[in-house]
Length: 254
Length: 288
Image (cartoon, rainbow over the protein chains, first blue to last red):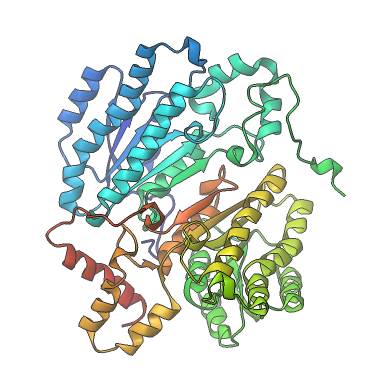
């Protein structure tokens, strides 16, 4: 529960956080931010699986929190999605999460408290061409976290998800490949807040879920997507087409 | 140290008691100038307490079921503050009736308080935000009843379901102005009614524990929520910590709506002691 002397610049003093999953721009930003907020950070990334397994094994102290990062999306239509690519994605997103949760759970049970936070994607809930394998993997992570939330609630352990919309943190190249020079205009068409997400946006949500500020919230998925999910993603795959509905521009309002 | 809402002008409806007061108090502790309203003139004491925490806070008596008075409240706030950065629509009244027996006058009254008052205040504050380029935040307190139905709450559920829809549409309309709109669907929260029942058991700590234990299975999390828990979530949505979140209708129910059927939970051997320590935090919050 949030206290009267709550300090938003130092939200995790003395907490041991396991930061795990995909290593990229976002994980680096997370590690820095968690330390600034007073946390002690252990890190375990995959691939490769051997390094990940060793890092989990080498973790000495029980963790108070886990923050799990899925990889960024790679758009591929279903006929082009090879089974081994899907297996690799499932291993990375779900089996890796399972290993990390099994590693931290005994300590959290002992301490009668802890937080599990998975950073996934709003593709877990939306339907966009080219995302079937990735959406399935993210949805699996979301479902796993919901079940974990209910399963370990009586031990004071909470589990939630941060569903990211487009974030410049790890998706920049893919977005440029998809939209080319029309990338900035795409935001104005499909996101109320008209901008890409930043690492800070995602980290803010994860800090909230990892701290006492979010006590009593469990099994929830926070959409950190600039409102994209509420207006639909249909425009994304038709960068040169017309969106089905155009919101009145502020210049045109009476 | 600057608070998360340092120098922000905040409005919390029904902010004199219970959950609304917990939200208003936390906002004031985080540097916000908070205006609260409520029907009961005793809310003035709450306004004075908030002003002690953070000078500039105030209370205006207002019956949120009366749209003229609600509009007048909005005007009075703008006159004193100039503009609003954060609006929390926290009011909620309920009447237990089966849907096929709903008294339509009662339904209108619920609709006025729970939804229409929010629209009246949005009409007052949001155009000012737009004109002045204020990247404001609106937090609507909704209810688990809007998504997980309970018998005899149809009218209330309809108003809160309407609140959820309003949240999404307003978010879509105002995003280009940098204004964010989100909602929290609350489950069981230890406020007014629970406090009253616990007060009746004053001096009987075992009786108070038994009363709270009766809510044990209402959610996976230790239940009921404390008003301060909800306040923390409202602070997150009101502040720049959630700068990329809009149109979200979040379940704030300790996981209650996830449960589709009765099930056994793994429990620690000291579960009873854990619950009692948690209940103590609720009782301490009520001065018991």
